Image (cartoon, rainbow, N blue to C red; front, side, top):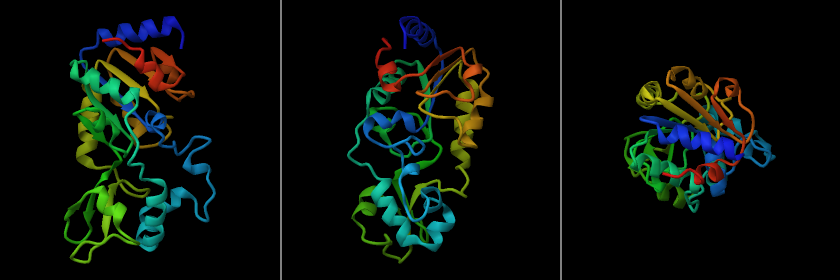
Length: 241
């Protein structure tokens, strides 16, 4: 990121009336949570079954114990802390500049950083529910359960995360789409924009300024007023309020 890019970013954010941040896994990599599609991510680790198959609804139903073995090992990063990107976004919301965070992440780090209005398109590891009676459980229950976590009623306790083959939650989608449609500035960060339907949310933005902060090129770069290919935590940390 050069000085000119930083000044442009600063100018747009300083004049924003209703900005929205739309982010993905790259926002949390600086907190030690691996990006599924990065060189060091889960998709490049070697398993008997590909991770995307393990994280599917059908695999969860047919091989529940193996699913939870993987889930415990590779999906729960409860010691992770918010990084400067999370903290800056929370500060932007507190200052009345940012109206919402729309995230594909399931780690809860935006809320931990202080963000209040967060739309979690893919759910959260911190919410879990009994598939039989609907009782809610925290992530500690999942972490401490051996084999398959079960409710007192005998039902399987499923993480409230969107698996492959499952639909995004309707209410969350509606809220996220409205936030993006109402925004005058949309900041996209830490996402390849390759995962649908979430990546399609960009078409609802009709505001004045589209900013993309991502380490690698995305399919929307040509549409953006400003593209900064750099570490998102380092970029946002430099924004002054």
